[in-house]
Amino acid sequence: MKTNRPFLTLAAAGGLTALMTSPAGAFLLYSSGPINDRASNPPSYANCTSCHTTNPVNSGDGGVAISGVPAEYTPGATYPITVMLQDPNQRRWGFEIAVFGPNDNNIGTTTITNANLTQKSTVGGRSWIKHTTAGTFAGTVNGPVSWSFDWTAPAAPGGIAFFYVSGNAANNNGFNTGDFIYNSSTAAAPAGAAHADSTLILQPDSISFRRGRSVTVRARVRNHTSSAQSYDLVSRVRLPGGSFFPPAGSLLPPIGLSLAAEGFTQASMTHMIPSGAPLITATYEAFIQDAGGNPVDMDNFTFSVTP
Ligand code: HEC
Image (cartoon, rainbow, N blue to C red; front, side, top):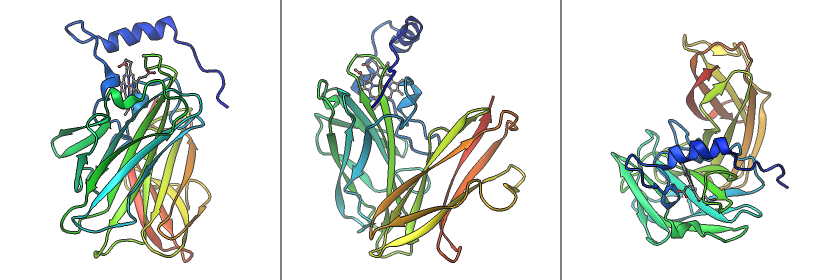
């Protein structure tokens, strides 16, 4: 059960007016489609909480899921992908998804299949698919609601395709307050090309690690093989000079993960940032390793410690 939902305060309403008013003074309706680069995708990992700030990301009792992503993709094949979002008692909905390759640019092609509920926007080589106004399903209580689109895999086997989504389970008050934001991610590997048995996907709640606060990094793992797998998940920080923190071992005790054939699992790593932590920019690295301690896959992101 969610409790203590904050009310819209006058201060928040003042900030909101500034946000919602375009230079011409007309209302800019964000609910007709969120701005780009808020799908919790790298390198910024920014998501809907950059404006829907009432609740920390992934803090409610709902969730978002991506389905239709194959464990291994066939080059050139088209896959219908569905984003499903649910949250008890919420009553308006939105999402944004990115399908990026290892270089944080598009891999393959996304195609709109329902222009009433979804739209696509592209800047350079990067695209995002998101809801339309009709696609917010205003007044639909609890969910689940879903949006679908097609993803066509690259014609020649490319790299791993990463799917990153951020969903907003909103309260239908017409403001950016009182809403619950959820992130998720998954991955598909190219069939017929060498790839690791499983892909580790890191998704920090934020890449700004504030002194004296805790930060949560979600680790999601996709098994690309048709046999069960088990791994240990470990992480460490690579400091600007190239040395590691901690100097040996990992930030947390290893976390054991078990995956069914072609399955998916996730774990959270929460770290307290000491109030005296140096204000550096560094790299967070995590690994999944097999029983022999051999690394199977690694993912990383750049973060900054902030005051
Ligand atoms: C730049 C700020 C900003 C970002 C980023 C943003 N929103 Fe919003 N959003 C707003 C504002 C302001 C409103 C209220 C006015 C309106 O309806 O557009 C709003 C309203 C909404 C509503 C209707 C809420 C309700 O209770 O009626 C939905 C749904 C929504 N946004 C979805 C999203 C999703 C999904 C994302 C992330 C992918 C997102 N927004 C990111 C500013 C933002």
